[in-house]
Structures are given as structure tokens and as C-alpha cells.
Image 1: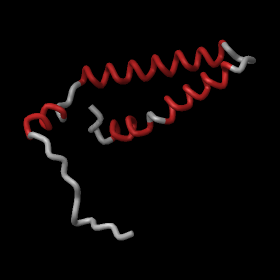
Image 2 (image 1 turned 45 degrees about the vertical axis):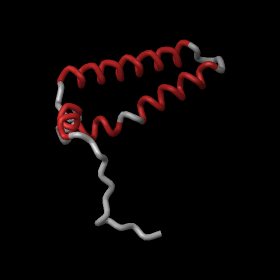
Image 3 (image 1 turned 180 degrees about the horizontal axis):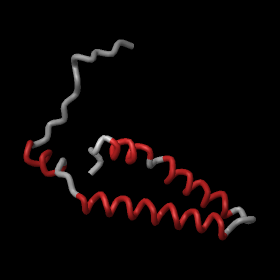
Image 4 (image 1 turned 180 degrees about the vertical axis):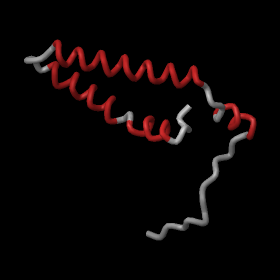
Length: 83
């Protein structure tokens, strides 16, 4: 399979809509991080609370999935492009 790097796909999107979607917002960032930490805390608490039952497997899976999927957020935050 040959990859042609000179032939990129460009989505057809209105420039005004793209500008609105690209607008930085501290509120959106705060909301996103609060939801992340609340979900992490609740899933961790439930994993601890259900220790010794089969429900623990579900809660640890959710906790691990939430934790593992946060890497792109922290990466982009380091570049100051996340929010």
C-alpha cells in the first residue's frame, strides 16, 4: 500500500463554523476536567467499595479506561492547545 502524503483529505466545512468550533474556552476546559476527575473518583471509589465481588472487575475496567484515555488531554495541555 502506497501512502501519498501530498494528497490530504480536507473536510468541507464553512470557515465561520470552523472558527466557532476552534474557539478557546476556559469554561469548557474546567467542565471537562471536573467531569474527568469526578468519573475517576466515582469509578475508583466503587472499585474499592465492591472489592471481593465480581463487580470490582467492571469498576476497575471503567477506572482504567478513563485513566488511560486522558493521555491526549494532558499532552495537548502541555502544548497549551487543549482548550
